[in-house]
Amino acid sequence: MRIAGILLGLVLAAGFSGPVYAQQTAGQRTLALDARLAGDANRTRLVIDLNRKVEVRAYQIANPNRIVVDLPEVTFDLPVGAGKQSRGLVAAYRYGNFAPGKARIVIDLREPANIDKTFVIPAVEDQPARLVIDLVRTDAATFLKQAIIPEKPQPNAQVQQQTTDTRPLIVIDPGHGGPDTGAIAKTGDEEKEVVLQVAKQLRAELLRTSRYRVLMTRDDDTFVPLEERVSIARTNGASLFISVHADSLSKGTGEASGATVYTVSERASDKEAQSLADKENRADILAGYNLATQPDDVANILFNLAQRDTMNASAMFARTLVGTLKKSARLHKSPLKSAGFVVLRSPEVPSVLLELGYLSSPADLKQMTSDAWREKVSRSVVEAIDKFFASRTSTVVGR
Image 1 (cartoon, rainbow, N blue to C red):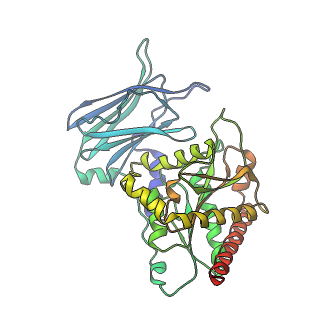
Image 2: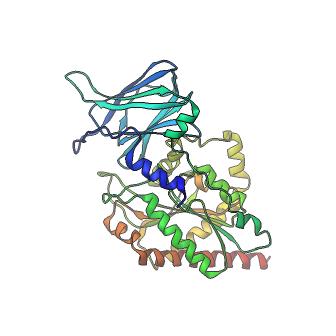
Image 3: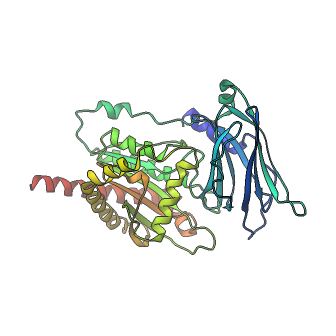
């Protein structure tokens, strides 16, 4: 594991400002009722009114400079336009729930600023509880000493140099990473780690065949923006992109289990697919990255122009993958779905998102954390990849 990944794990375990000691009462929703900024360019305070005291953790992230505040799941009932106003050190802020039971506030900074204090005042009589984040101006060097510096994966030099190697390049994309944990099971198992272990097993199985080159978008606890994951596949001329995830349902939203294979589409196949895509696509926003680096018209042109054949190839691989997974994994009642996943929007690279199962299902979780199951499922994925490329080769030869 690279140094940045190790430091990031330590940072998230300890927190920069320390936990604000509070317990949530079971069964009670947390509401964010109002928000306001105060102060100037030297010291700025953000106050969020809550209906109850909660535990929070705040830390700094560089490039771009921002403050991240993690707290339990929150229903944000803030006034229209909240977060768009700027004042003092704060350029803007955004908020949302990015995983079951987890909410996040991201504060964009105008100038480097350290966290002076983060605390929650309990409700008193007719006054709501208040989350208070105090920021104080600092210089760039001091900010960097306190901040997490996200490590962006570098292009794989070996892959770049293998210009004469005609073997298909498979890009494996373990979802989430770094401060974006993804779904979290009741046991504490995190999606980012579960899918990373499966991705590593799949890489090993693919390399064992000697038929493929393999590149991973991350191989440790590193945050990689969604568009960068797509860029890694496109820049390296990938033949196939497989994003690996594990879903979870919040308490009270029903039960589900089994693996699902998703492809990209402008219209979701059902509400569950749309909900999952929305959740996955929010990861960048809540980590301080901008999903829409291209204008909508350009993005639409790219999507519609070259992707028709790619979408057909993606759909063919998805069907093949579902067929081989039947031998090794429990499948969802509707194992083939589609939605507008950002990470699948490469115009020229066939791409699927494999949801291994549900961390909210004890049976699925037991399987996903089993070495034997990971090996068995990885071999099923390799079988699907073999069939996919054999089919494409025969199609080309037959023309």
